[in-house]
Length: 336
Figure 1 (cartoon, rainbow, N blue to C red):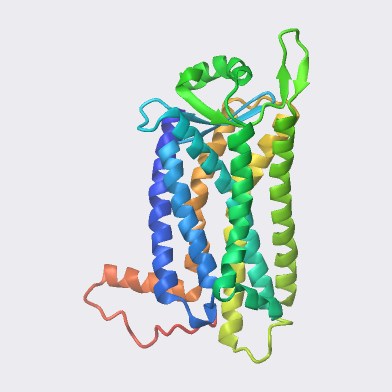
Figure 2 (cartoon, rainbow, N blue to C red; figure 1 turned 90 degrees about the horizontal axis):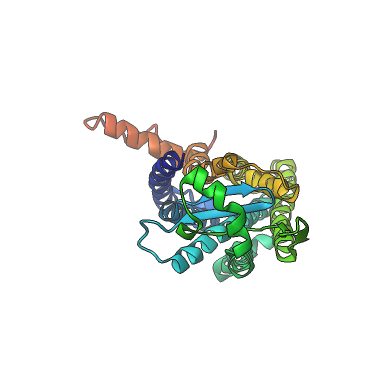
């Protein structure tokens, strides 16, 4: 199983990097002027997903659930990095979970400000946009530091997972590093002790998820309701249509990590609190985590018309290099 997960993670990382590089080029070269400072938010997402994919293929992390234990495991065998370095990288990888939650929340807030013509849109201009970009970094920093400081390897977890890790992955606990909560710690006399650090960590993770989803759903619903009604009358149809395209691209782009990343991890946290043993089934999350940055650029590339047309022009040129693809009919008129 581990072999197939490694293959999927490697293929997904390659396509993720290629697609996000293409998106970065399109944002820089083909963005309509009406896009404004939103292009910096799109660039932030694309660069984030490139680094996410690189770290994913370097670590090849495996999600593992055993009773009230949920871990992100990294093998130290055949790695050029020491166990301490891999543990730090594993913590950073988990921090990216928090970054992604804050990242899409900020994007929905921006779209809401645009759709309603809010004066607060000015806070995204100039150096002020750095303050907004710090929000996902703070989300990620909180979760990453928490993982690194209180959710690392312990003797108790080693003893609980030793047999399963050997049977499922053919690893010894000395061959891995990991981080994650162990909620109900079994004692030698058969009793259990609730680990407060694990409980706190899980509820902080849920807090990050819930706060982000509240912002996404509130701004998303308000944006949809007001996109046509409150859009300033002095704006052109071109501007309004572009904002509609960007909104629906963002909705689709956000559904991908929610379905592939946040929902599976949230469910595993719930099963962990319920002390339900998922075993090797939890490794499926490792695949969905790898697929997320590969699929996420596609909505922006194919829903935003100026980017879509640029891709089609390149495809025509590649298929028929002798033809003139710069025909007059290929105007970047955003009316779809």
